[in-house]
Length: 82
Image 1 (tube, rainbow, N blue to C red):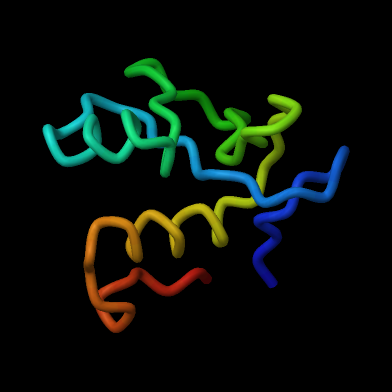
Image 2: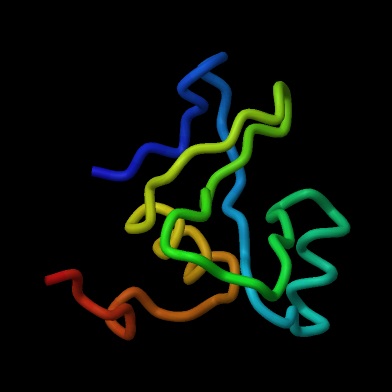
């Protein structure tokens, strides 16, 4: 089950996107729908951030699902978790 709510304040978070951002990703970040996390990626990077209190947390399945929705990709194209 995905958890897009901040574990500190309970408000909705936004996903963090890592890697070189596309122009579309830059627009989504500019309007506050996602946060750009940079190009260096490790195994324990947070993938959610709270816009209210800046707390970060990890929920990879939920973040991946949210990013697919933001970028307009059909859910059937999502990789299945093993």
